[in-house]
Length: 480
Image (cartoon, rainbow, N blue to C red):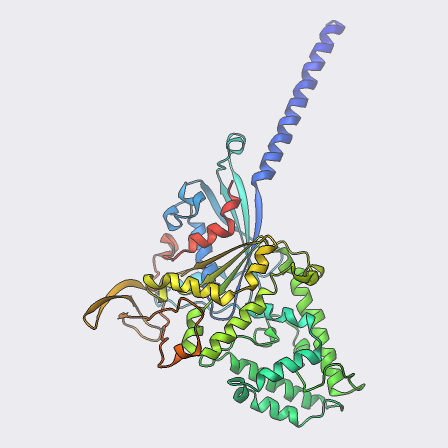
């Protein structure tokens, strides 16, 4: 072989390697552009349906390839581009109790799974066929890794503590405790407070008794017949795995700006309060909340309407304090705590199967009124915001009733605590923020229902209302 022939052979090989390298690089760029990881936080106050929603959403996604009709508004499923969906082990948190929830829902006598009491994680790998021209021709599939983090909304109620001194927070809680209905619920705690001098030392057994009375007060606020939502600290009622030693404080009647005498009860309580903020509240935002890309906030408006005007107002105030967690542009203080990147926030009114179809629009309008102005500030920072009403598992069917000679829309299902189906008229939803007069005469009497017979749900999935639309808003853009 001549030198010229050798040079030609070498150049062809080198060119081929360059072409192969360029092709591999181009393929890597395309794959990186379509493979996504999206982290969705799911939260809400007690009884808002977080566990049921997460369970139904994941179960229907696992069936997306074989049962695309379960989610007609999720484009990747409706277009039959889903190749495979599988669970993978959580990386950062304890696993979400998915299998246990499915077992409870599909047993012969189904029951609703227990409420969220700690933070948990569930991961899905969703393989799908891309729809963009380049990706479709270069890749046989792409993958979206969906990380769902389920956690109590009560924990978000603690964010405002980071901006309040112990004395300032104490003054707010004590003022609220003296107003109905908290005044009667807090009587024992306030009696114990009156027996102690915050400016003097107190024995540990007296402190423990005082804190126990405060915790009992917070728990009583959340009893179903009371229905109050704004309880602080949130981990006093839902501690999760919090060290009990960090939950040993309560508010005191002290004057803001007045230094606490050394060794006094006030000084000790302030020290414990600061430790709670530094060792519990800040780490939650730093270690968990900062990683969310999308957020779903579930709201149980029907229970709030059922209970009382005071409970409804308290629920509104709690929800707006929760919204501080997403208002990461305001004054820059939260951004200095964590680098947030939440791009979408979904507010979902749950239990839509507990009302008739003609009340859906009013429920959505009431949800918007409940959230109010704080959402506008979130949207100004670039986050997309949506409102939806959902029923993760539909426990009723549409029906009609004759009422005063007219046919009215109704629901058919098995009320909670009963064993036989009934046809019921659930009532009307106000389409704007209600005033106290609307609670006169027990106007609101929405009832809970037992789960339907779900024996076939493991194979057929769960009937739902708008679950696929909620999912489309949260992650639909990830399937390119």
